[in-house]
Length: 320
Ligand code: G3I
Image (cartoon, rainbow, N blue to C red):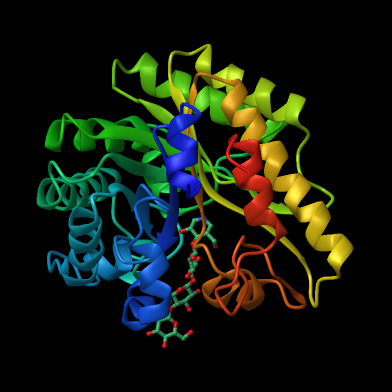
């Protein structure tokens, strides 16, 4: 069995992967991505973000996002739509627009309503707000918070819920996978949304980890439980575990163990419904472009061969 087949047998809704438009022309890559035995869910890594969808005010272009949505449909894979509101990959007409509160609320609502309506019925999940917290766990000093205040978050969720009542709506962030100020403040974001009487269905834990420094299973389980206690589900949304490159055999074994830790924690918690890796092969990972000297973060290597991490995940899912 592949990862998705094993994941479903173990009780997950899906095991999935991110992908991106430039890679869709790589036929060897596609042969694995298209296999719904391996991946029951895909996430567009870039093409549903604000700078792609509404690069200039009021002009919407869905072509790239549609390509990923069509692919998911053709393959019978669930689609995690990513994302509606984020400080990054935000066009400068928004980030430096100098809008007053009422105007920015209108821009935010219009963007969300148009995009969610376009994909209505096709998104299993929507990452409505992404990374609202900075590395210290405070609200990020971005245009949305500075202009509207924390109310931009429930406002965004309300607009998404109105446009597609059947999509599950997620708050998505990193470094919320263990007890910390940032984790606590992510819990507070869920409470904030609920206090407005607005729907939130889930929290995405991105899970961008480093080999040998991955969260422990106990810590991850308890972090998941804090969200479950508020009545929302949890998904692991962007899992990868990077290392210094080139990676030794020992490191690849440790990486396999680290992947198993994450899978075991998710399986141990009913609230944890699915796992997505942030692309499946080192060939297309974001890591080396962002962390110089680091990479090799995914279960398939640059040549699309499986690594020990792949066998580790399968065995944690009970099929290894
Ligand atoms: O599209 C332009 C292209 O026109 C230009 O020639 C090229 C030159 O650099 O850049 C292209 O844009 C790049 C874009 O990906 C599309 O490929 C950006 O430089 C690059 O920074 C961007 O990286 C993406 C990153 O988000 C941006 O923050 C990664 O691919 C994407 O995997 C990554 O995903 C994020 C999640 O959305 C949120 N969580 C963290 C995760 C990793 O950073």
